Amino acid sequence: MKVVSPEDAVSLIKDNMTVVTEGFNRTVHPEVLSRALEDRFLNSGSPKNLTLVYSGGMGELPVTDGHGWAVNHYAKEGLLKKVICGHLALAPDLGKLVFSNKIEAYNIPQGTIAHMFRDSAARKAGTITRVGLGTFVDPRQEGCRLNAVSTAPVNEVVVLGGEENLFYPRIDFDFCMLRGTYADEKGNISMERECLVVDNLAVAQAVHRNGGTVVVQVSKVVRAGSLNPHNVIIPSILVDYVVVVPEPQNMWELPQADIDVFCGQVRVPDEAAVPQAVSPLNERKVIARRAAFELAKGAAVNLGTGMPELVATIAAEEGVFNDFSLTVEAGAVGGLPQPRPMFGSSINVECIVTQSQQFDFYDGGGLDLAFLGLAETDPIGNINVSKMGTKIPGAGGFINIASNARKLFFCGTFTGKGLKVAIRDGQVVIEQEGSIRKFLNKIEQITYSGKMAMEQGQTVLFITERAVFELKSDGIHLIEVAPGISVEKDILAHMDFAPIIDGAPRVMDARIFQPGLMNLTL
Image 1 (cartoon, helix red, strand yellow):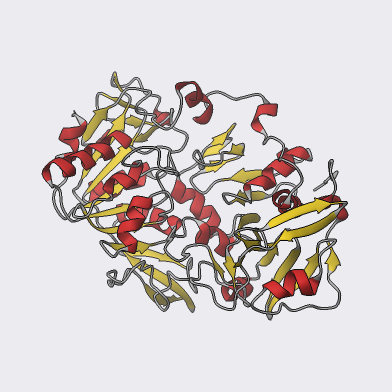
Image 2 (cartoon, rainbow, N blue to C red; image 1 turned 180 degrees about the horizontal axis):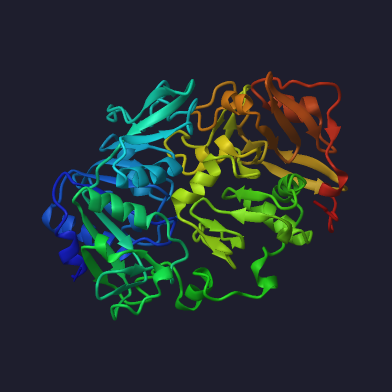
């Protein structure tokens, strides 16, 4: 192991290399190294035609720096020729290159990329998974391609044991830039002051196995033998170069006072580790309240970003927050998952596993309940959250989570853009209808397959402020209606298709629409 400057480290990247970096949202990303690479390219025009591979979305919205954060530094025409990633929403600069056909781009599910790192390290022929069948990543649909210049196949359908699977051939990586806490004089890398470990070990193993170069950004070099071996995530046998960036710059995403809390070295009082009360009773709180009725004692739960995050807040208000365990796809188990920009980390976390291990659990059906966002759905329950016109956020961990959770709840307002709702006297009043429909005859892209869900026996609900729908083998059924809502005027008139209605739908629980606590029990 050799200690070098950021500039010397990125000077080792040559034209046409396949480069991996890690992180999740704002966390665990080697920001100083990424900036150094951007500066090198802007000053010298080198390196050229890189292939960038990463799993979880990295960056920050809105962009608060002139040239963005994390993988946005790679968004330079000529620097990149291809990106293979799990998520693009936090990298709008990359998204512009993709949408304008300036680079090839492939969106592989986040968990599948995590497993590809591990399989490359083991020199397997590739990665085999059922995740993504029937969605846009299926080669019989779009095959993960995000634009017209992306023509190369990245996967194929194979039949094993009588079942269809997707096979992704192994990718061999040339270079990786990672982040840790400390390096000892031999090059062992610890991560005790990081809020996640993501897949740093698997990436380093994969790059080293291929004869590539492993560079790790750390805050300090310490005496050999002084690191607790339980804290060492990347052993010295895998590390070529270390770049020292003292705190707080190494932990660029966190104020110095918060580092110990987010990395789990300090536990905050229990009352500070539960979500704070939701604002006034509105459509968002109504949706989260109805969703909270689906929580179960002892359940392993995943909450998507946005509307689903409020489910935890409702649980805290009702005093049942500690009756189930929240998990985050990046590897955190237990505690309170944080919203953006720190999504991925948790306060009072109970356990942190690697990202690939978390997706082993998810892909194997370990999640009891998942609450995810609702963007677009069609008559057979397909969902689109990955492509909306000029926006290509990508799937992230959505496909892994949605494909395999035992019970699945899509949460969102019934219509979008301009919707105004009031809750008066225990009833829902639509003051202004949204201009964007979400229940469509045809959606732009399939991120979740309703057909596969029914074949796997999933329970699937669509929860809105005015109605609840259930997906069954014959399509979407309207099963509940909010008090004050007209089925004809407020629901059917704003859907492209007619849901199946078996008799009169139930009225949603009156407690949802009243101020004060619901006295929820699980």
